Structure formats: C-alpha cells, structure tokens
Image 1: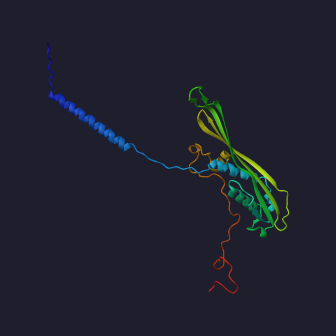
Image 2: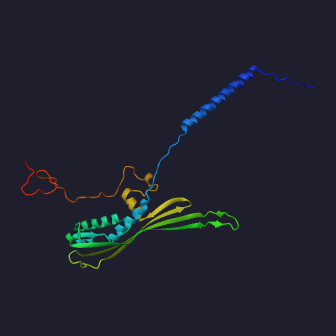
Length: 266
C-alpha cells in the first residue's frame, strides 16, 4: 500500500491569502463604484384632462365656421351678444371669437341689450370631436376550449380624430325685436390623422398639423430635432393696436368724473 503525504508549503499559503485579499478588494471597489454610479431620479409629469389636439380641433372648427359669416354687416352698429341660448364645449372661446369678429368688422360692443342697436343671438348645433380607428392586420383570435386569446397584430393603423362646430346666428333690432335678416347656420370640420406602420409612428397629417407647423415650425412629434431651437413661434406677430396710443394728458387722470365745482388742481 502506498501512502502519499501532502506537504503544505508556506509560500503557497501566503500567495493564496494575497490573491484572496486582491479579489476582495476588487469586489468591494466594484460594489462601491456601482453604488456611486447607479442613481435613481423621479420626474413627476402630468397631463391635462383634455389634450391639446382635441382643443385645437374644436377651436379651429369654430374659427372655420365663423369665417363663413358676413360680420361686416355690423359695421357702425352697437351690438350686444346674447349667449343665454348657447350651451357647448369651449363656450368661452366661442363667445370671445364672436366678440372679436364684431369688433374686427367695425361694430361696437355694448354690455346690455337696452344700449344696443342690434342683438346677435348665438346657438350651438354641435361642438365636439369624434374618433375613428382602422387598421390592417390580424384581429385577436380566441382558441376554442381554452381560456387563451391570441393578440391582434397590426401591420398598419390609422386613428382619425375629427372636430365639428355648427354655429347658428340670428340678429334682430334691439328696440323692436324684429329680425334684421334670415340668419342661418355655419358648419365646419377639422381632422387629425395619426398613422402607424409596423409599430412606428405616429406619422401625422391634417389641419392640426398644418396649424402647428405654421405657428411653431414643427408638429410636436419628433419635429423639435429638425427645427431651429432659437424659434419659439414662427407665426406673424399679432398687432393689437392699429394706431399709436396717445399718452399725453393734462393733469392727473381721473378714474371717475368729479362733481361740478370740484377740481384736483391746488
């Protein structure tokens, strides 16, 4: 029988300990580096209850419907906007647009019907949006006898959102209550198309895209990488006053007329 004796060499033990310390040092250093490099950041984002696209579709439809009305007929008249029969989405924008159009045509707005020559009565026949979805692909399929459903596969899809605004207007004499014209309705449509191809997209088209590109230079979906970052808005500036404002005055401007016999001069 042969007996083999293993002899422990002191040099090998020191070498193993040195290697162990080196490995431990590397592990500790890597762990510390990972902790130092790895971070966590939370960014809070929020979305409005209504998307900007939806609001643009409606406001653009309102603008288009009003463009088919001859507001120039109110030039020289004192006009009161009657809105008690108007009930719609974005009523504030609709009424403010009516007021803007009357002022733009040369009419004068008054706060009460008693002070007006003409009363413009507005009504809404429909202000809102519709969504239509279509795709080319394989619909979801259920396997008979098994609670398993294969998901749908879309090769190409399109989501079309449409904005509609039907505005009715009639005007009558504020003193007699008689109609000054037949009035009528004006309807306008806007649309926005989002197209996806093999999961890529959206590729946008429609009136909202045209309005955004005309205003800021890109459509808001990836366009910021291709547009100039120095331009916030590219549309023509809005002129608020067509004539210079006369800032000259005599004495101290008064908020209200003073009674007879009183003066602010000392």
